Length: 134
Image 1 (cartoon, rainbow, N blue to C red):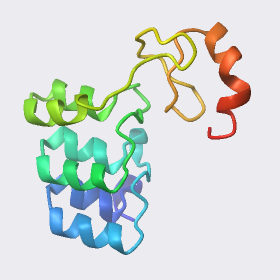
Image 2 (image 1 turned 90 degrees about the vertical axis):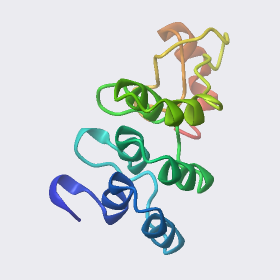
Image 3 (image 1 turned 90 degrees about the horizontal axis):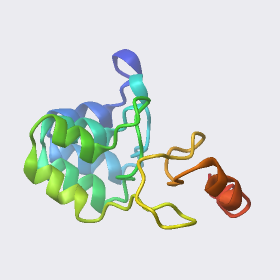
């Protein structure tokens, strides 16, 4: 692994090396591996605006809803850095609805940071079903 726990996939995604990203994924690289700040390879590709790397990671099933330790998604990071095409790619399928009441929210399960819940009440109501995938 690279400095601060970056995997080769993190490095390839962050540098926009799509062919390397594809080879690493085909070889079984963990598309959800986390580095410093809970950054996944998709987050790095989004930060740098590497559209094709983002597409490759999404096609491989990378979780575009995953959050960093600062509660940022790949989409919010792409927006922060002005990568509008990446924002459009990621936002097209983004789901920020509470699993219980369907209200739009940016809050996530603190354990897996994937499932959206608008409140502790909804999280408690949905925990029994959610904990199986958390």
